[in-house]
Image (cartoon, rainbow over all chains, first blue to last red; front, top):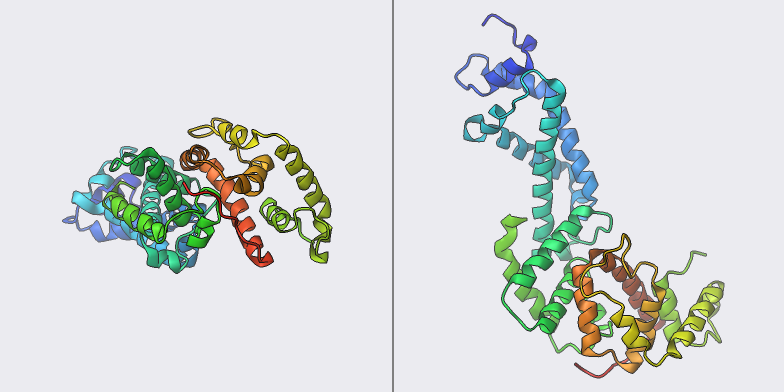
Length: 213
Length: 134
């Protein structure tokens, strides 16, 4: 073990990173950060930009830092189980693409849950953190998941269920206000406080499913 | 002057159904408004237009690359200008709810048109007519 840490091959670096008892553990992690931290930040940032969601634009650096932290946790948790799982030996391009996949999955999960939180939280919506992002494929995924879940939850008459679901989607995904909802031909005869009651009830029904987003 | 969106044009037509007179601010859009007015009249001539329009909406999502509501000014003319006066029935509404819920493409098409329509109507001081309840 006379090798200088800066000369560590990818394979050696990963091996030492996974061995906290090794004298090279610190060196290996420093080397890892030197070689890959900027790449991890870049990959995460790209995902955040792809979302184009208001809450991401508002606190981009904060969101990116949060996600990068989760990526590192993921690599290290359970005695470096994920990091040990890389099977490309000394294949740098393969390691880059492996890291990019982890960043992509972690970012998507984080951003999906963040966005879903704004669907569930009136305060976040009012502060403009939520909102409609027409170009985002991810929002479409959440939309479809929400519809799927709410259609399978407690049975109601189809007419009521679909109407309530429509109110909920227009309110949370498109930011329609109560008067705006009532301006539609099909919703103009809604009773007093129906919108409030529907939004509150459906949020309550969706809340336990946050982790599935 | 910017181009008039479909939602805004429909709100103007709601408040100024004949486009005559038309406030000077909307004169640059006269041509678009007149063509929509003409189309509305053609559609209104068909007694079954509401039923036909809603029946054409698939119960589930669109299977085309583009949503059914994309650029579909006929639908919005019927739903926002013709149907409210004749009252949209529960089965038509259920059809629309089911489709918008199940088709994100059409949801994306529907919301900006309706939003523009609503805000323009507010600006014009127009109101939404009350139909029969269901």
